[in-house]
Length: 108
Image (cartoon, rainbow, N blue to C red; front, side):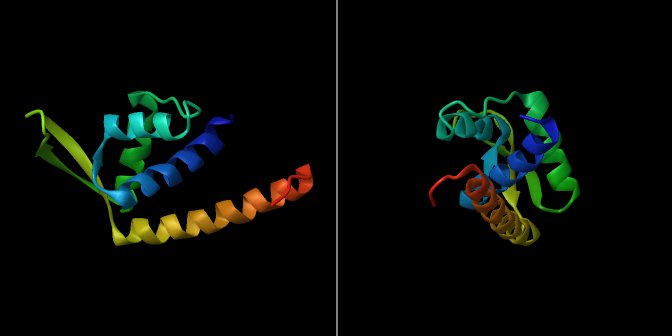
């Protein structure tokens, strides 16, 4: 998949995960891989630049916390701006998916 397209999709997926609960980076990597049945297999070098960009844009915020295992981790949470952006991206994605499906002859 094209890297730019993957980045756009990944930012939407990360916002979706964070809309459910605060998470740390590696947790999001594992969850994306698991939920997508290994379609989204990412490493830290892919996901952290996207997280840093989302934070810079005000879509998410981060804070350091002690995890259940006693280790300090950087957790991310979605902001109100991020929730609004997620809603917008989901609407765009739905329209895109339907339009492509119609061209490819897929049933809705």
